[in-house]
Length: 227
Image 1 (cartoon, rainbow, N blue to C red):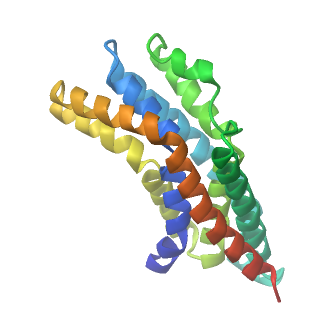
Image 2: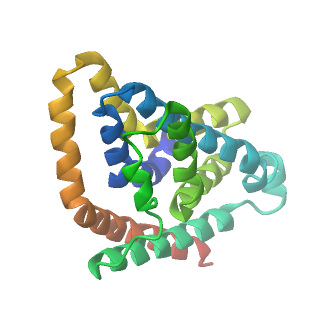
């Protein structure tokens, strides 16, 4: 299981280091009305979609179980293809940020403007939408499912590993929520400063992260497809 988590680490980091999602959580946490509740709802919506993806695509990408996967020659080519697609998407994002073009995976601008007035249920739906509209997030999750399937951990260990992937992928969203709940108003200034910094440097962060992981996943994808 430890070896599988190491293999998942790039996918975990890539899923977690998304400045726009962190900014959205911080904006909700620093809002005056039901801030923590709305932030929790946003992350819960993301979690529900990821778990649903795990349930729906787990059997497909693992070949219905380790024995069937072995009989059909394994699913390594699926993982390699997903990594190659993800690498190309990330490199495209890095280029768009360098060229000052809008990121197609970024949430619509109107979403950010409605955070102050959104209700908790609206935040739940928005969190689900963040995962559903992002091709990169789809490939991150499908890549994780394929990696876990290739490891043939068994049903219980496989489910546990996938849930751990989801938790770690959302760790940079969950951490500010705990800080806000534990330190109450004292955390507002700190989170506000962090949110401002992320907004200013969002483009540079996205470009660097996308370039580094784009090159890594492209290499892993090509290497996995070569005989």
